[in-house]
Image (cartoon, rainbow, N blue to C red; front, top):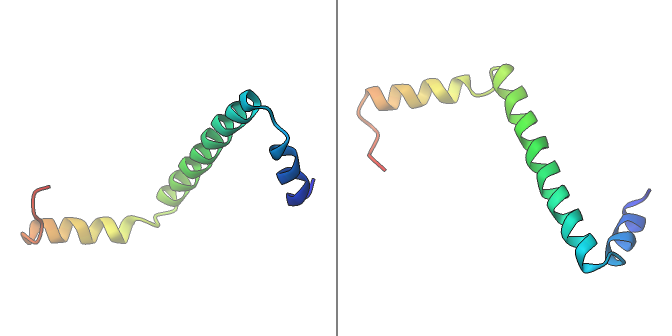
Length: 65
């Protein structure tokens, strides 16, 4: 299915169907985001940022929220 066909199909959904689709799509995107963050964490992509944060905290360069 092309993007144009998908867009056309969505515009023809009833109010109830659109609500259900919207909820499903938001959950789908959130789950996809979670899986990407998890994969990035396992791959060590946040390690350097974490080390910088700890160093800043230990050096007193942080302020309370």
